[in-house]
Length: 114
Image (cartoon, helix red, strand yellow):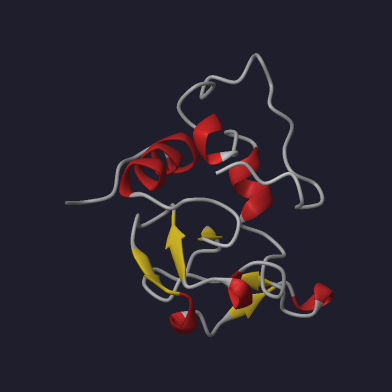
């Protein structure tokens, strides 16, 4: 799902190791961090579901009740399952277990437990 209307979308780098796999989600390996930060109002509150690329769980956006980054008005969602700030809202990208697993491996170096 291509979203050109989100300010600050990560550029599609021809050198990205995820080119082809993650471009279908309009997210690059570097873009995952961008989409998982400062996402409270513009992402989580406009979503039906969210996913965490640390624990690879998909859950209702209403389950997200904790935020961090007090300096910017508690704007970064924390995962209700693992407590890590790696929450991606479905208002911006199409969530899938495959996407979350790939990002987990890239950013955390391990795959989630089955």
